[in-house]
Image (tube, rainbow, N blue to C red; front, top):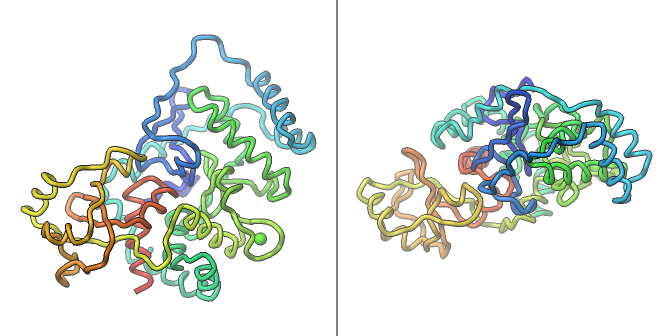
Length: 369
Ligand SMILES: [Ca+2]
């Protein structure tokens, strides 16, 4: 992956995990922000304890592959698909992805992440894409009840507008991760989902590429997310999240709609708090205690009217918060603050990181202005 220098770790996608190879061992670093993911869909939480290395000697990779093959067949995947796919796996793919250790969403503050991502250049590309695909985006937006700008923004964050989708063969990457005992079950299941996608003829071994962590194509869907949310919008008979923009946008829209996006509502907005107001908020509004990491970095929900009476104002300097009857949580950066509404949760479902979700929201607002 030659594309990890940007603000977005392209290796991560829905259902994806930060994976580091260290001293020849797979090492999974789990934490809010760095991990993508429909944690909900995968039944996982970032704070899940990692299984310690087991004492008994692990099976050889060849034995492990043989057992994998048997299980794939027992799950109903055709012998032809299993044989062809497993032939591409010779040994664990011991790639050292040093740059992946510097996960921008984890290492940088929210403020820095957003600043680094929202360059005039990126905003310009986003606007160009928004205009270029205007007709298609409007059609998909109307069908799924999603703002086109949000679709472009997620697309931008996930794969730099389709330019960096990852070149790792998904089957091989997932087999490597599944062989490692630390998160074996998760990746083993994703591997079977990948085989199912191949078996249905929805993709080919040549095409099925993505991040080193198994996130595929322009929306960076894990195989399980693909099977749940990918859409064939251009009508050629398969959901092609690798090269069909229609399918990519519709798949992102479908994901967010399934994650609970409510049409006609905002994601949230930037707000301003004086030091006194911030102190008052910290005394009176507790932090959330449940949910993936990003949720535990924000306050519980309060009615907008309560935030107003606490002294929170619009960041634009345009005065008081609107009188909408909505509930909002406060997300705190170092010097920037945001009130986020329920649609924000759908973005976190896609990737549980406040830096990511705020960047998605702000970029969408910029380009739809
Ligand atoms: Ca299609």
